[in-house]
Image (tube, rainbow, N blue to C red; front, side, top):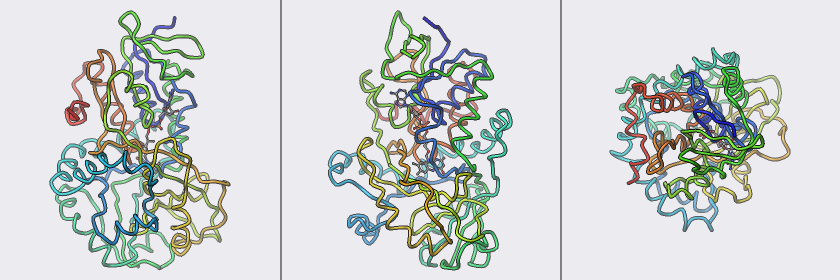
Length: 414
Ligand SMILES: Cc1cc2nc3c(=O)[nH]c(=O)nc-3n(C[C@H](O)[C@H](O)[C@H](O)COP(=O)(O)OP(=O)(O)OC[C@H]3O[C@@H](n4cnc5c(N)ncnc54)[C@H](O)[C@@H]3O)c2cc1C
């Protein structure tokens, strides 16, 4: 029987970052996953470290937008009809949390995490020798029409008042930043307080290597084997059972597989999303991530090629992939940038683990002594993995947390 101080379940960017922070505090840590580090959701995101985020992703309210989604014509969202009855209560809660006063509550509670997100990555990247993946040149959102730009502008006063920098750009200003784009849009907003990485998987792997260099142990095992034994937490791995006084569930979309049997039922759903890499056509390139705001996809230069990522698909976590959004967005994407042949035969699918208030749970598991939670990072797991890892490690080791962790408690769901 191997014995460690802490078992961390899940080696996505969230679990790896938590394990690394715990190891930096001098604890012995076993990080357990059934796959290699960063091979699930953390593999294929858009690579944006969204230090500029202020409001949650809005729920569309305009009838025209809803109708387009309902008729399955919207590139920005898709759904499986058979899943909607089960999803309905979550969707209504999400709607409540993504408008009006609730948006400002989200901003007040989440801003401390977003504000520290780039700095926390930079610290880990320096230690892990991963700075070569980092771009600190912000991201650009482009708007095909001035009307859509004006609509987006409704939130900008509050964002400016919070001290978040951005620049409203016309076509020429946007093209000066990204000369590779074709002039099929009218306006842009440049967000300098965002960074991005050229290979999210490599960044997670570099953090895992750093964890190992500090004495952390990476093990293959099924997190669903977690159970109490002699007052400690125990999990089965290919190296035999491991036990620890404390365990962390950082399983992202799969956290309920372990927590439901323990009686911890929190309202997690997934927003599925896809990516596909394309070869450039000609010699144009992009310097940073570009979001085609109205069409609802991102175009990001990655080591693997030009990565196009889609918006949300509402469907069961384990239902077969249905990457239909690509058919809807490709004509628009090709008009914005000269895209060549796809690199993979099929798009990759990931699952954003989302609570209805768009905030992660970071803290103690209710009713289970020694069990901790770090999951539900939604659209921002890459952004927030290191900063929530630090917060969790501070809570677990009894240090004074660098920010108030109360808003991220599981107790908020009652
Ligand atoms: C298309 C797309 C674009 C995105 N773009 C961005 C972006 O630009 N910026 C950003 O910040 N975020 C982005 N995100 C969100 C981000 O990728 C996620 O929030 C993040 O990856 C979640 O990380 P995680 O570690 O919680 O989950 P995961 O990376 O999914 O890790 C969970 C781990 O648990 C393991 N696991 C599951 N079940 C078991 C089991 N039974 N036993 C053992 N191990 C198990 C899995 O193998 C996996 O390694 C995007 C997501 C998508 C889908």
